[in-house]
Length: 272
Image 1: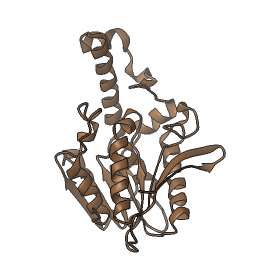
Image 2 (image 1 turned 90 degrees about the vertical axis):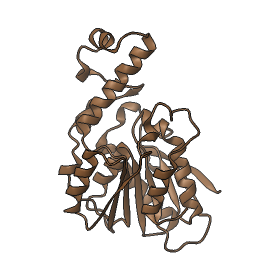
Image 3 (image 1 turned 45 degrees about the vertical axis):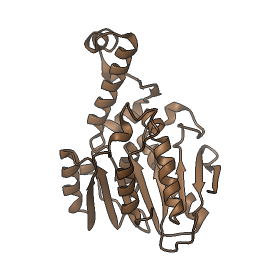
């Protein structure tokens, strides 16, 4: 499979990307932009996103996956990461993908927080996306951030071999002041934008179809219902393994959530 690693973007906001060349001629297959999750979750999902890109390219789609500015192999300091910055980076990567492949039929597939920021970035996009696939999206930022804090404290307690409540009281008396989560800096701007995130209240994305891939939580059900009033074609695909990518067991495993991957690919166009 032919892949091209490269840097793109402006001189003051240079990002790293990997372009997966399509393995076969498929004129109707859209080009696909993959949007990573945040922080440690981007590490957890690295192999999954690579396999997703390979499968799409095998089916005839040009695919671009990339690291946001200030993360991964992209340039920039870690404290440069923000929701608004990630949103701008997705739009830059979108234009880069068009330049690379010449296609105007573009689909986005995002995972975790990447799916949520892609939703925001797709507002007022012209021409509209053919598909926006949101795999296990963050719907309410405050709830997600609280989960990150809890995971951070749990990890610290496990490392110290001490009870979680004891570690929380001694080392994290004010968790709102925490500026690092699971080894990744959480800048004030990122934290403020994340905690204000509410996809249910956000304007609709410019996409002909929106697919939500998840385990079918009540939160996902509510979001899909709200979205049906905004977008003509909305589908909530329920898969038991849709959130398995973010489990501790999956961190160093070779197993990928195959059924969820199949659902993502099916939502983009059905290629295997």
